[in-house]
Image (cartoon, rainbow, N blue to C red; front, top):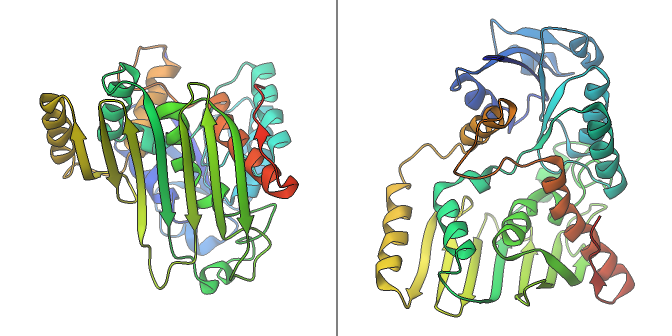
Length: 342
């Protein structure tokens, strides 16, 4: 049984530091190589083999896993190329900026009998795992409605900082790039989402994708909801939240990591107290949930049962993309769109 998996990471941008910390804190993984076209980014990490050409790194037979932290539009191409070298792949969200590319990834990895993992690290936030558990056990009764607000600031300077930001192919827009974790969580909590009606617009930024979106949805279990997204808040981020209106209570969680309770009022006061205690006890923990994500990857690879939460496969990563691209289609057609199972 393989005990240590050797990892090569491509894309030394902001999110890569979360991956590197997670890898280095897990004794079952070893970061052996990093790759970036910008050599200055590579110099920050010593005692790790450096590459400026991705295909050259893929030829390193010691590497078992490729972690992809490059711009969004490169994920599918780089993942499929890694599979041709028989590498397991961990890719940052979104797994692709086109639904056809995402399907091609899943098909390729299935054909090669290789694992494909998509990072959805907020599913590993212990407080959100608790919320998921009580909803799955029907402890709050029927979920009537869900409301999420993602009111952030992404200035024109932010979009101008890199050529790929704000483009259709490489960025994908506010839903795909900034809000996909929230859309994934809502589908995880009360899905599957089966129908959407959406308005998307580019109101203020000089970009090729939306900076503003409203997604109204219905789930298979007749939960109704709305997701409001704006990258236009003045100066700084304003709100990140999910509200749950249920038969036996209501909860509103907030924060970019959704690690705070703004409101809670449950019929079961003992359960209410337990949830408050869970959030408080987790407030001071390491908020790099990529650490738990990589732990879950290892448990999956060695076929060890993980009792906390299932690892996010390529198929799971596809679900939020289906919602987002259905919302884009709805806005374009000016009518609701039914989401079909793929």
